[in-house]
Amino acid sequence: MRQAILNLEESKIREVANAGMGRADVLAFWFGESDEVTPDFIREAAIASIRDGETFYAHNLGLPELREAVSAYTSALHGPVGPERIAITSGGVNALMLAVQMLVDAGDQVVAVTPVWPNLTAQPLILGADLRRVSLQPREGAWTLDLQKLLDAVTPATRLLIVNAPNNPTGWTLTRAEQQAILDHCRRTGTWILADEVYERLYYPEGARCAPSFLDIAGPDDRLVVAHSFSKSFLMTGWRLGWLVMPTAMTHSMGKLIEFNTSCASVFTQRGALAAVTRTDEVTPRVVAHLRGCRDVLVPRLQALPGVSLALPDGGMYAFFQLAGFGDSLALAKRLVAEAGLGIAPGNAFAPEAQGWLRWCFASRDPQRLEQGVDRLAAWLDRQPRAGRA
Image 1: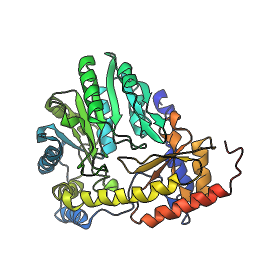
Image 2: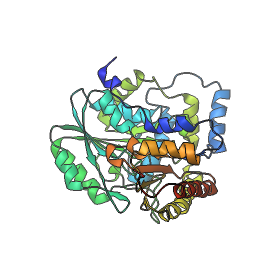
Image 3: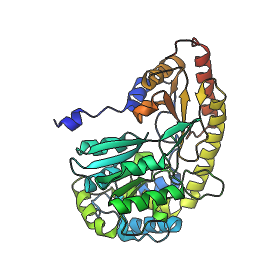
């Protein structure tokens, strides 16, 4: 086997989940998904497609009508983005991997802003890239960007910059000024930007429709690829459907690359997505309002616990908090499963610098589950000796 594959770390999130799956007594908040099922009208659209016999291959780039609908949806948020810049993919993960395959050769330098969902740093390594990390910095429970440090790391030798904002796991979100500085700098260095904006609608400042996007400020021919997913704001995690926005000159080649990866996304899932994106006002605003409420239930309760460092996140679906006095995040997360019946993700799954942190997904249909989880954590903390926790 290739050494790059042998060197890949297994998912620490999965490692914790595997320790607790099947246990009815565990409250699980480890994965980045809501426990609410996909809305009925989306499921019915997929069922109707299957009943109509749409069980054959589709166009590599996706159903034309879905590309048109995604174009209209994106344009309403960010200004004109034509369907010729859209590719439908078999999941957001697939979208990101396709983008990296399209842009990165073995030995190319790739810079990633971390902590971040581990797939985003694993994908360049799978392709043999030289991966360099620029870490966000924690200050009073919030993670912030040292912009100059990032700009210094991106040089003419940098092929690709990977940025996820709103960020999984920290909730950090780029400001418009930071985006503009990054885009201007990458134009000068000739560096491509891969922007993972999957959480753009899960953004909570009052009156905001979505988080700042590179699409708001970039030209159609800029070296920018933006990855999206139907998973989060449409409650469609298990459907495995996403999309990419790219320069028009890239789209034909992306279709070829999709052919050699998955051929196409399944038609019936695309029919469900078409229903979702054309009726987004029936889903996404409610989801965002509910998640804001879940955040506002969980975060103050966690902040009140001794030793917890946590700031209110502006975006995403996670409370990312430090628990003072404990060392290895993975060992701590496994202890919480075994001893408290509480399943949350270890911070060191997302970057070495997040050792000692934990990620709690607050996308819960019933906010009372979040309160029960905090009660379990508080009771467990009360049982721990005050000294020697590390």
